[in-house]
Length: 234
Length: 295
Image (cartoon, one colour):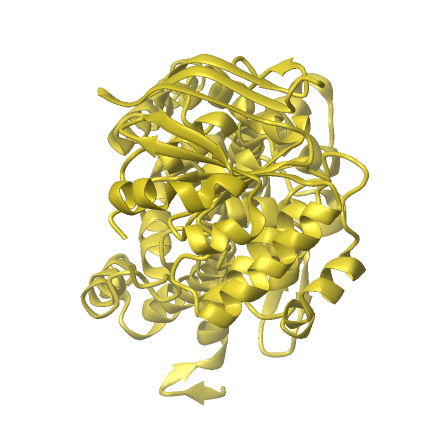
C-alpha cells in the first residue's frame, strides 16, 4: 500500500497559553475523502488551521506528499498542494467575484480552468463583477470552493461547508464534492452534519477534547449511530 | 477689475492655485499614509521625515553628483523607498504582533532621529533648489500669471495619485493588497508572500512621500523640518478622508487644500485652523471619515 498523502502524528497546538490539540493522529490517502466529526470546541477547525500552518505554536509531525511541513512557512504551504477553505469562507468585500476567484496563485498544473469553474457554478459567472460579499451565503461557499479548485491544489482542507445553508444549497455542494472525488481530489472535511458527510466521505474520525477518539469507514456508520448520537448530542 | 463676492478675481484665483498646490502635497502624503495604515496597521509618523528625505536626496544628488531634477524625481523616491524597505525588514516588522502603539512610537522616534541628524549637519534654515529650466517662468492666463512649475506640481501629483489608485484597484498586485488589508492570514495561506507585500507597501508609501518632497523642493526650501511642519495637517486629512481609504485620502487632500486656500481669501484669520475645524466636525458627524466604512 502506498504511503498516505497526508499524515499527521501526535500533533499538539496552542492558542497562546491554552493547549487545544493534545496529540492528533490522522492520515488521508490520495483521492480519499475523510470527515472529522465532533461537537463545537473540540478542535476540528484548529486541526485544519494547524495542518495548514496558520497556527504556528505546534509540535508533532505533519507530512504531506512526502514533505515535512512543520518548518514550511505559511505562504509556502499552499505551494506544496494544500488548499484551505475556512469556515467563515473568507470572501473579500473589496474584491469583485472574479477578483476573488483569481486571487489565490496557481500552485500546480491540473487545476480547473475558469471556464470549467463557471460551468460548475453558473451563478458565479452571472455575478462576476459584483463585490464578493454581495453574494448569498451559498454562493459565497461556492466561490470559496471554486477559488481553490483553480489553483491545482491536491488536497482540500474544507471547514464546515454546509453551515448555515439551505438544504437545496447543501445538496448542490454535495454534488460538487462528488464531482471532485471523481476527479481524484483528496479532501479533509470538517462537518457537524454527518448525514451530509455520509453521502460523500469514505472514512470518519470522531474528535473529542483535542484528540481523535474513534475512526471508522463509512460502511460502519450504521453500527456507530448510537455512539454518534451520544457524542454529537444530535 | 473683475470681482467675485467682493474679492478681486486675481486674488481668488491665486489662492485657489496655492490651495491646489498644497492639496497636491496633502494628497500624495495622505495617500502614502493611507496605504501603509491599511495594510500594516502602522500610523507612520516617519512620513514627514521621508518627505524631507526625498527633498534632501534630490538636493544632494544635484550638489554632489550633478544629477538633474528629472532624474532626481525618479531616483529620490527609489532611494528613500529602498531605505524604508530596509527599516521595515529589520525593525518595523518586529512590532506587528505588539500593540499598535509600538509602531507609532517607533516611527515617531525614527522621524526625530532622522530630522535631528539632518539638523545637525544642515542647520534649521532652508537651502534653495532651483526649478528645472524647462519649468521656469510663467504663462499669462488672462486673469492671472501661472508659474509653470506650480502648474506642473498639480499635474504631476494628480498623475501619480491616479496611477497609484489604478495600481491598487485594477491590478493583480492591488488585489493582493486589498485582500491582505482585509485578511492577511488567509491571503498568506493562499500562497502569497504577505511579509514581502508589507515591505513593498511600506516602501511605496515612503516613496510617495519622497516624490512629494522632490516636487516641493523648488517651491519651499529644502530644510530638515519641512516635513514635521506638514505632517500634522496630513494626519488631519487622513482622518477626514477615513483611515485607510485610498480614494478618501486623494480626494480629501485636494479638497482640503482648496478649502484652506479659499479661507485665506475670505477669512484669512481662520486659514491655519480650518482643516482642524473640519476634522472635528467630520469626527462628530461621521467618525469613520468621509470615505471610511462605518465599523
